[in-house]
Amino acid sequence: MTDQTLTLGWTMAQAARALRSYRLVLGFNMAVHVLIGLACIFCPGWVSQMAGLPEAVPVGWERGWGATLLLVTALYVPGWYRPLIARTPNLIGIGGRLWMALIWLVCGGGFLWFALFDGFFAVVLALLYRRLLTNQLMTHP
Image (tube, rainbow, N blue to C red; front, top):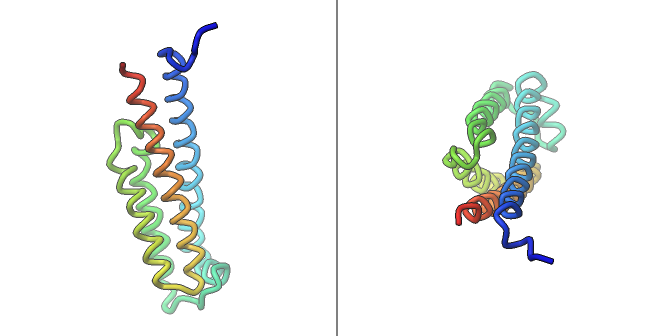
């Protein structure tokens, strides 16, 4: 019986599994961002109410934030599509999520849910991206 952990095929399978995991979690996060962004644009009062925040005055602020969220999410697409080649969107995205988690935390109140959301995905994506890069590196003996 041979040790499969030292074969190139096994290592490549690990890298492929890490890629699928990273893309799945990032894709889910991006889909949630798109839904929140669209909700902010088309139902701004509902988003504030769901977060336990007072309605934004003027409503344009919440719609603008939704549009910005859609734009930022669109900038992540190359990083989702080819995370090993387009590393910059992934690294900036992870750092940006950490930054926004800190900002939401400082804002307090209903923004704590946003802080937990961004902080959770920043940590999970950072761990998955590290695993992806490590596994990919191991495929090149």
